[in-house]
View (tube, rainbow, N blue to C red):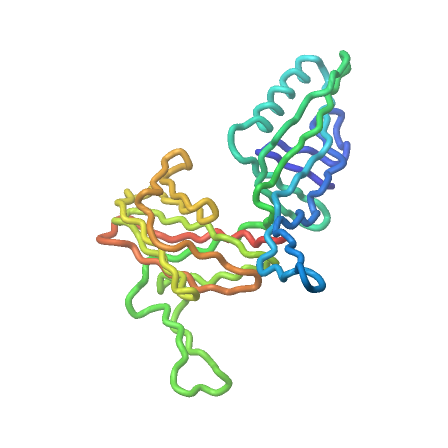
Length: 284
């Protein structure tokens, strides 16, 4: 059974109950968005100049939806639920669960006009959306590590071990680092989270050499979230912006790439500071 979830509102692709939200005709969910890189023809030769970076436009997606109700009161309440989910003043997370697995997109709901129900116990509407990010994302995998512990978690090539063997002293968690892989087909940006207390933190992508620093006290138990895709930081919720304390370089993870990411708290620590990296593989 397929389901489509928009900002927490679940639409079923199969009629399994006398009442509820349903959807059909999901259009251009899997389509490759048009290229927006111009083609410059060679004025005095065959063909055109090559395109170095073929960037994609945003993706236009739509679906038909309806609600079957048991009473007029229920239908009125369902309309308000739909308006709240589809009319929210923020980007909507849309997730499709079907026989091929689960994939998500971040979209802006552009319009969702309700049709005249003519006193029937159901109402229909069409949802038009735009995914400004043209990529789809798979399930999020979370990696975590505590602060580096002296004398533990050391993985390095020692001497001239045969066949390139590596010695492993402890796991990566005890060395303050995680090893992450993007199994997708497109570049993706990991979300970084640090739980206090500490005076801030430094996160280093040891694979690329890029480094981010957050220079602000984090109380014990509070969580700072760095959204690399939007290049913002917040503490204890998206409404508490602390991006001004963030500096350095954001680091993407390319398709099929494996990166080693390390973190270190700044200053004295209290409680149980911990680092979390959330990675959603990206697909075009």
